[in-house]
Image (cartoon, rainbow, N blue to C red; front, side, top):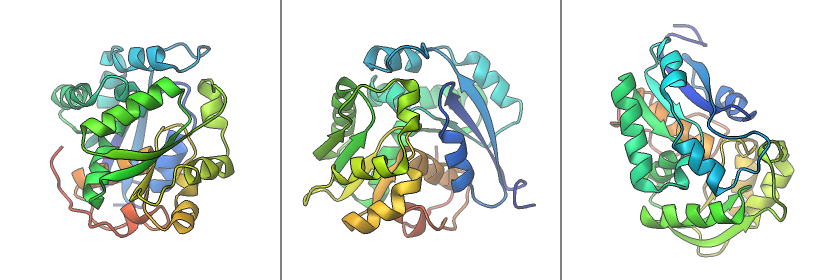
Length: 253
């Protein structure tokens, strides 16, 4: 085994305009894990990523990108768009993971499901929620989390409507401010939702500022994928979830 391969392969499905999931996964990658990416279509890059667009992405045909990704025989497949299944609901999210798992034979993580898994692992029930989404998707996200057992006691959202590239171009300082605005005395954790938002770079700073765990889409996916691959050691520098939470290696998909 070398530092870059030999321990496990993570196959990652990425929306085709997303520019931050891949570099985030490089930051979060445990030693010996190799990363393999395939691009997802199913939405218009020039349209605002509203509920209709993301609903369409969630329902889009995965056959071709999934087939190409299977060429590397990944141990775990990560579905890297949070809003695509937040807009459909928890049952759809679980069914999508089960379908990918059945077709690929690989353990499967979805971004939305990984948020739920991370919060459950930390024993959190009340959260502050922040994202770059349009308000309608935020409403759906809060509903999704409510259905899965988490009460949103505070919420922060951008003041303008961002296109597909605008979400990814938000700098870490702005993401930090967005997350800080979602804090509340009753919130036990802050959730930063969106695989194309530069949240991973802000986790440590934001946790220090609010004194509670910060969960991001990409960090949560990495955490659950590590468990599924039987990788039990913590990854330093990216929040309490990866540093302090017990990694129960081998948890079922």
